[in-house]
Length: 364
Ligand SMILES: NC(=O)c1ccc[n+]([C@@H]2O[C@H](COP(=O)([O-])OP(=O)(O)OC[C@H]3O[C@@H](n4cnc5c(N)ncnc54)[C@H](O)[C@@H]3O)[C@@H](O)[C@H]2O)c1
Ligand SMILES: [Zn+2]
Image 1 (tube, helix red, strand yellow):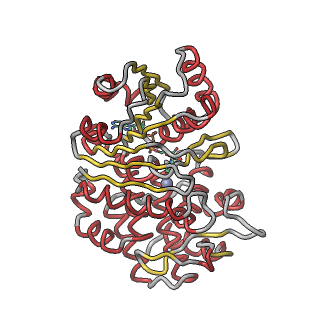
Image 2 (cartoon, rainbow, N blue to C red):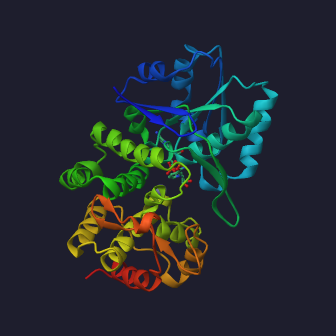
Image 3 (cartoon, protein in one colour):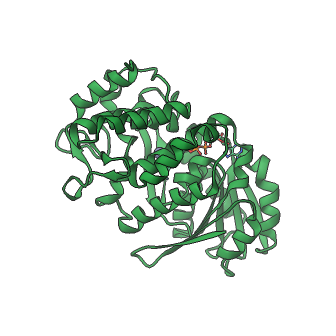
């Protein structure tokens, strides 16, 4: 079992623990005695698969455990679902001493985390991610939120979980397509900060595609994200590096009306942005190619169903957009991001992005 303490400036502490299968032991390391009541929140699929076993373990720690669920899918990561969950918490009489346990994928982390951020002006929450994407990314860092008809993650809060428990056994039931979604975020973290991890992913690509993941990889990925969040929780600079692949990725997700899911969209984003990086931040061409090749070997890179012109309006709505220019977080080398004069993003790559998009659409 591996343990990591995330130390945040506002004196909050987030404990992260990783285990292959000892969920009960991992929970006992991070559990706080004041959590006498638990609201276990998850989507219907995950609650159906794991809710009973997890609730059973939690009952050994808390006096009361109630299970609340909502329908799966990005279209349910909205205010209406949050309202329903909140009404239910009020009906059940939960007070400020409760703990919300978020059990599920990234959608549950965002939604249940945001409920915890605002219920009774903020209660404790513990993230128990069950998708690879959530274990590698969404469960860590404290960003919570939901979508509106106008865009993704437009409403939300930063609310750090008191603890994050990564249990790789929970991933066993994940469908293969979801597995690939998560691998993309692992690749992203390696390109951002860990060249050795990237080389490990290259060497093990075939096993990874089949669903075999060395638990150490998860902990390493988590450490990268924790390090960045610790240094810059509120995204004043360094945290922007975590947007690698996401400027193009989010725009593609939106332009396709969510037909292209988050991980697949970020895969295209990583391939395009790596090519942009050749021009803007001096990434060697061979390294950009390695990024694309790894994504292809993981079967994560698919031809986008929309063209570059379709994504342009969404690039203009990107949160990093400044003074009429698109900004991107770009690598100088695999494992090292361009500091961009302290802003960690570079301006003006739309023409470069258009060229790069064409190359990714029609590889030589
Ligand atoms: N807050 C953040 O920092 C952050 C970071 C990255 C992504 N996100 C968000 O995360 C979301 C995507 O996350 P996701 O891909 O995990 O989506 P998700 O929560 O919808 O999970 C994907 C699907 O897998 C199912 N599932 C999850 N775990 C399972 C398991 N163990 N067994 C069987 N089925 C399982 C779910 O029911 C769902 O159908 C997006 O909304 C994205 O915006 C947030
Ligand atoms: Zn992402």
